[in-house]
Length: 150
Image (tube, rainbow, N blue to C red; front, top):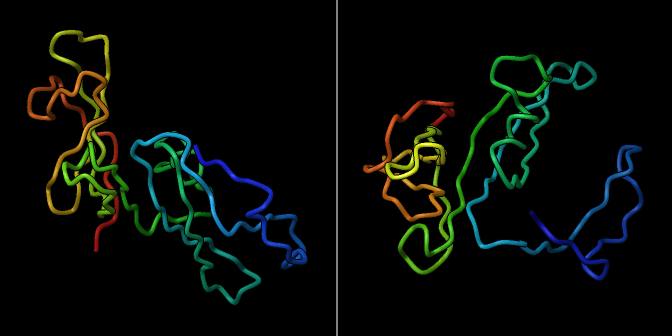
């Protein structure tokens, strides 16, 4: 989740007749994995050229709502970048990488606990395991989604 404050609001007149709000800054509510997503939107009024949107997404459920893989939503997923905090990527600082695939797996000591595994374009694996279980030790891995990688 992202936190916004009124003092970071940009005072602009509504652009293109919409009621969007513009922000100079947003804060992360939690130090956890999040995503930068590039979506192309088909627009007949733009001479058939897609309009690109870059969005900050807090979890995969929200991404699926914006750009479902098997449904026509008007949006085409161009790319997904995973942003990991230092304790996840081992560097001690935030890092952004191309996301290639999303997997689900089960904790070896508690098979009812499902964990997401994120694979980067370079083949690095990150997990959201509450037990800090390395991806290689998780069981019953299932591919959930692949993402476009240049």
